Amino acid sequence: MSSIVFRAVPLAMLGVLAVAGFSSAASAQGLNTGAYGTRTPYVDAREHYQQDRIFAGARNGSLTPREFRRLEGGEYRIRAAEARAKSDGVVTPAERARLNGMLDRESRAIYRQRHDAQRVGWWR
Image (cartoon, rainbow, N blue to C red):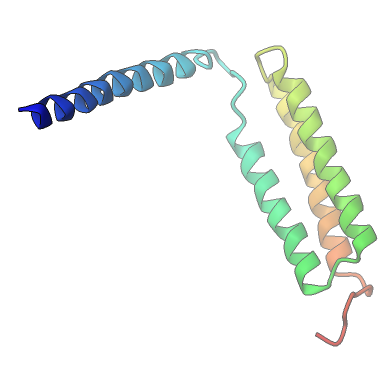
């Protein structure tokens, strides 16, 4: 009989936690129901892809340590600009356009630095 009691308590608690989790997820979605909100999935995906390109360049030697630091600084500036755009609760179309322009420039810089003649460990 005691094993039934111990089993019922965790299952009941699990149900309460599940309901609490669903309600908090629903309220979080409610914050961004406006025309624009603060979600920037396209910008976030581009940032992630560019980070992958930078680290791939560092791994294969096509980026020198100085180039790596400079490109990482550019990525940091983009993340800071995105945080500023989100700070008032709305990312406007103009702010999105500015972020995309910054990402475009950074993408070109990554390409140029990865395809220049400078190499680290050319014997690899």
